[in-house]
Image (cartoon, rainbow, N blue to C red; front, side, top):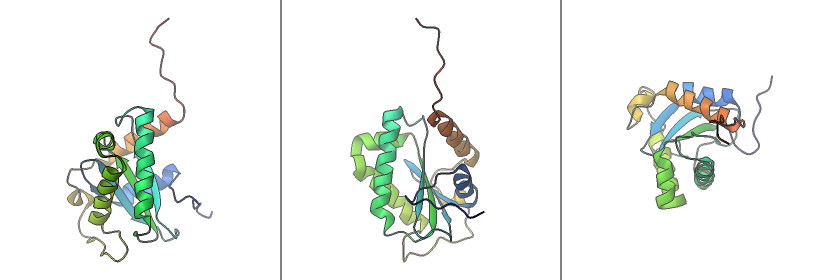
Length: 166
């Protein structure tokens, strides 16, 4: 079966996210975690976002996602072709959006892109270092996978349980 390639340059399937989480390299800062995995079948970089409920309510999460997509679009022409990227927003990303808006998100994402070495013309990071060595703060892969699953469940229209009100 031929792999499906998104025309909008986004990762959409759970299996695509899992591949990037498990086989990709991670880099983190205070606000975001970036996972990158080379994808030879893609002509341009593709983006996947994970913004859990820990970041805030639906309006706040959507604002963070919208600004992350915009920051990615600003940096996309500088990225190497054939990269699958997943950006995980940490709860402090909402504070960054409130304080600095698009400029803050753009700076945080640009920092991670530079740190990961996925800009066109930059050297790739050494293959001998592990993902945990590249991050400022340790990244728990299982925890992030659980948060992703939780976020997907909430996006499927799961209604909150009635607490016995009127």
